[in-house]
Amino acid sequence: MHELGLSRSIAAIVEEHAQGRAIKRVRVAIGPLACVERRALDFCWDLVTAQSPLSGAVLEFVEADGDIFLVKDFEFKEAA
Image (cartoon, rainbow, N blue to C red):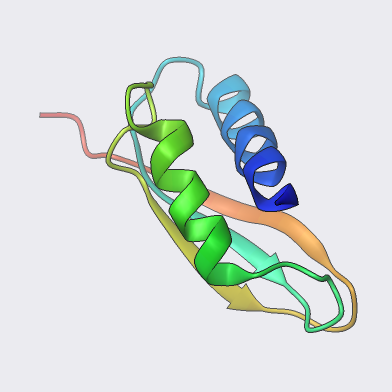
């Protein structure tokens, strides 16, 4: 299941750019030819982020063309 590796990579990318700030949402663009099972990716995301700084961050999917797979953007949580 390569979705586990993809989830780990997404988490690493977001954590690096977040620089310790809390993340609310991560959006990933996935095309129909990317060979990525969205349900499996969502399941793996929950496993990978369960006890990490990204715990509670929602993974959302955006439609894309062809074989595109990329981290589109992410949203920070509001500071209390």
